[in-house]
Amino acid sequence: MKRARFTEEEIIAVLREHEAGAKTADLARKHGVSEATLYNWKAKFGGMDISEAKRLKALEDENAKLKKLLAEQMLDAAAMRELLSKKW
Image (cartoon, rainbow, N blue to C red; front, top):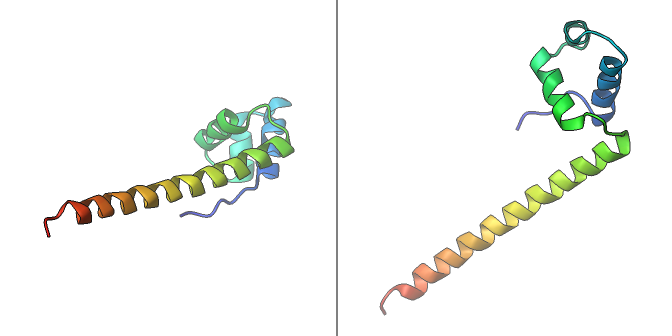
């Protein structure tokens, strides 16, 4: 998976600059990202504080772990059903 170049704090700082009146094109050029990236950040982090963004990241990580555990359990259950359904 691709490593993120910007932390939540940096993203929120860029969004605060945008809210202060800086133009999107100027911000994109200054920070080396596309305008689409700025709009995606705004959709995801718009109106958040740094603590809220960190909490969001922690919840996303926990959710990913839980999804992985669920997928493994479902795979184990399917394998067990297949093994038990065979005639001996």
